[in-house]
Image 1 (cartoon, rainbow, N blue to C red):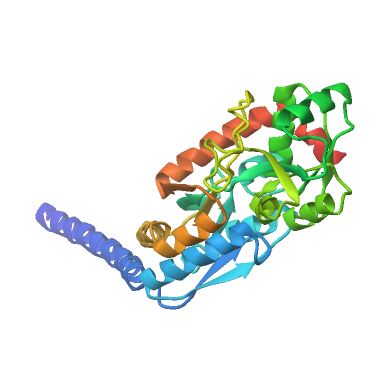
Image 2 (image 1 turned 180 degrees about the vertical axis):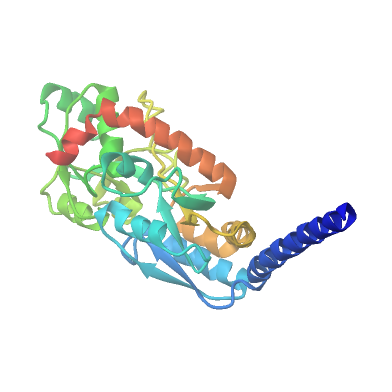
Length: 330
């Protein structure tokens, strides 16, 4: 009697194991078959901007690697947070991926993004940075950053600067610099970098803080570049010093990264990570980032996730130091 009970229990255990194996099999087969149709890529910025250009180049190559096209969909607004929220809320089936702006670490803490970057995304790759800088019209009396700082010290709040939106990288970077220099600027927010640039070219604002929208105008002699914000000088503007070289410990490169919603099948994530790793290493991508003076800052998914968590902690300190909650309300 005991013998048959033992047998029965053994069959039950084996049956349960078989069922579990069968349940796991479709998921595995699904991952092997993926992608069976085109993939949607959410770009949280307007078409034609620097981030949009780099993402389109990456998607073209990654699509070739995966054997399916990746269609870029622009979901701009709220300093990139409309697209970031759409990505966090999408179905984690590998058919919706997108760009994650590093400012999700700040905006989630400021309440602009109803998502937590530490747990609402699957991180796939960090790709490239942006070249930010401070530019003034050629007719400006400020020939160097030293001139601008000296004038701002003597005239607190008199110098106006245009940026692409409150709480964004250009606004926060400029305020971080002002704090390090012991000066006070008067910030003028615009809807995006293109409008901020027009504000300065039109003579309505004294200075521009933006990613490389100023580059063609500096080359054409309409604007003067006073400083860039990266770790190193840019190849195209070798004579222009970085903020760090000028004695201000401020580095802003706002790397672009790629992710998917949380809960993505690890096997699908591995395929995407590999495709974008190849895309970042491609000649097509290099041509686009060289044209935009954007530094290559590749990290694989797990390292990119660690980086995001580190930036999140840094932003917590910065939000308090720069009183960003108050600035967002003003």
